[in-house]
Image (cartoon, rainbow, N blue to C red; front, side, top):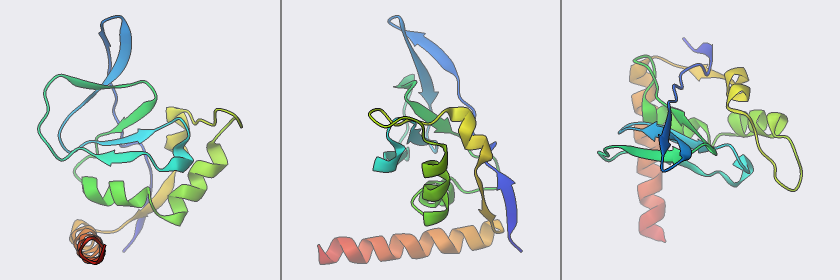
Length: 133
């Protein structure tokens, strides 16, 4: 069964480092650029990091137990979420979206076992593409 859920999964923290605001990131977070998101500046943090922040130009997503981080990461490359992003982006010379806009994103959420299969298949395809290139 597919569940539709609002993307209320992110939690971000503001931390001041050298007088600049930023958001703390941890292993297994997904970071999404809120500035020019149409350029697909998304990253999955798969390494251990300590006391690392990103600028306030990024949303930090820390998925809960019901969703695999890599599944969430790969969702941002789907037409569904790219369409959501294009609908909430404001501005032309400096297009951006607010982190609060992300709460409006609705996406399919299959059971964890199915998410694992989807992620495995995507990574298998990516590996094949990398070998070809």
